[in-house]
Length: 248
Image (cartoon, rainbow, N blue to C red):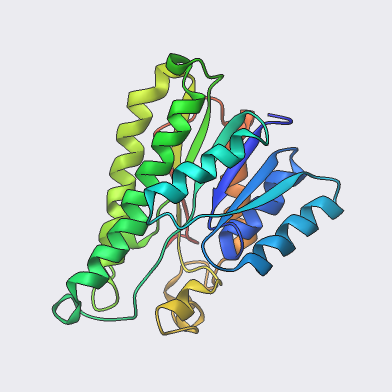
């Protein structure tokens, strides 16, 4: 995959940032998609370039199809696409379903589900041998919440990640004969900023006793799983979803 491009959505922080850095170390040319924080995305690009890697940052809000199309067009000018990491996602503040607005639920589903499907659509159009591509890999970020349900916390987020699990399985079957592997990763309690977005920045550490390994995970540990799935070392893996959750 040397000199092929990996698009990583939500690549300016957390798991996305860690994945961008890990992919660059493996020789990928990295296209970092970010929604708002241009400075953070630029810092990731600078760190990759300091390590003699190649990277660009492109603003893209995956809630908008036009942004997604523009992202992939920008990546086209950077090199042939070899991988997509559907990492961009949002979570709402802790709430029961009966306290959630339609606007909140719609936003969660638009970003986490529709955005991922549209990014995958653009990737398939470029990577599938059916369209003249050279094959590639799609890694979808799910969550242990898809299995656990996240009652009294954010069932809308959990439902969106359950949809991602189903999508991963279906798309894997759809494009397996066209040179594309589609896989997923389910992080558990990981020490990232997303818990702050949910209004409980200490949530992961507070719940660490519920993890069989008795600790939270790191973004780097999730990134290691992602870049392995992107690599030829996982050449016979498709349709699988890897739990990176400390056994939770």
